[in-house]
Length: 363
Image (cartoon, rainbow, N blue to C red; front, side, top):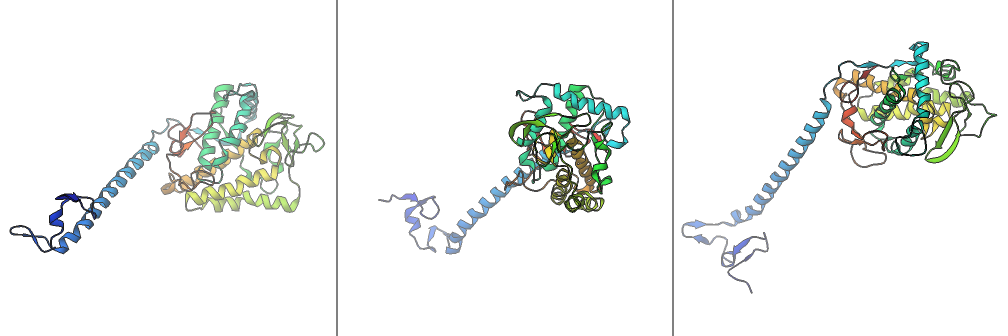
């Protein structure tokens, strides 16, 4: 039984039941009329009010997010930025110091609490924490922080006084096997010996240079002790396909990309993949950091991102695409770069600029 006051079935409001049953043109009070038009306008007014409230909340949320991203991007610039140079431009003593520091990582304890060396930690982390960064917006910032972590390990754990160095494979694209990075005396050794060790993704044990018979702990995400393996491709037709992915012409096209998303994809799908497919062995899988040339390769990729940022100042802080591999979530500068215990997790925005925040270098 309804009382004189009850909830209106239309709006969920408390109304006078007697008044609700009156004619729409009947006066509520002497000298006051409520027309049908006025009553029909009431729900629309409520919807408009609700829409304004939602808009205000969204605007405030976006403002806070933009402010937080801007705070990360506007970090104070470093006082004196380091200069990363190409491998062949280093003096002999500088090359020897770098190689000595890399080998030193093999004698350092794991940061991950595992029964392995700090050297092994890098391939272990790349195959686990780094796998989701591939083919997503996170590809180049994740690796920018990853190689920075490697540089810090060389300097802090192994007293290395220099900085990361890169391999500009556009100088060797017609025959990469002749590059000075493969020198036995002043480089990282050459291809593997087909007569030594088992076949590892087309490669065999490297038996020359400073990393000859280097012990590698993992293959992909599996514990599989073996020797560092390489297997340079010599098939002319197949090699030409891979070489074209990191030719000067291809790199020039990539650097002309108009958006971050386009640049990031073309860089990964092109030279990033082409070089390891030419070298094969350990370099051509998720535990690629087991091959020390991996870091020269990725420093070169980072240099190309830096170059694109410098030549596209309006897009230098852009960051678009999927947040992670096969993710439907859109990327944000506030996304976290996960290092799985190898280093502190940070925001993408903290490495978007090579001369602010935790980074301090140029090319």
